[in-house]
Length: 146
Image 1 (spheres, helix red, strand yellow):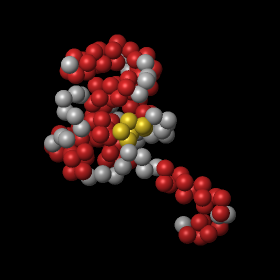
Image 2 (cartoon, one colour):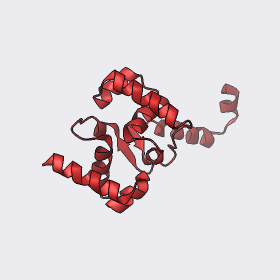
Image 3 (cartoon, helix red, strand yellow):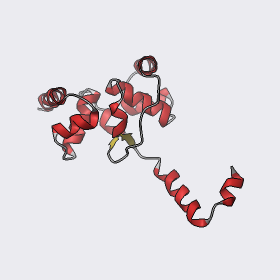
């Protein structure tokens, strides 16, 4: 590995360093939500596999019990064998969005995207969900928010 790094010119080294430093964002890329999993399964799977966090760290971050997270993670592995698509980082949903237990994870994502200026039609497209599902989830969020 070190031989490879020494063989690169300065601009290539800078490009690699820039790429490595930009990987550590504080959120989940929007493309991860297209997986055929529940939102909580996607969040837990991303934090465990891609961010390499422990279940205890995830528990503190999401304000959820360890047993819930452990079961959610194992269920996601059974349902979706391949890794999450995390390549589209044009929109990143911050982790702190999911800590409020008053709202479901899907309600939290939809509310965050609406507050970021996206329409419900666009949100449905970004999440790979039906428009009516997104509309209903956002309506429930607004009812809880009153």
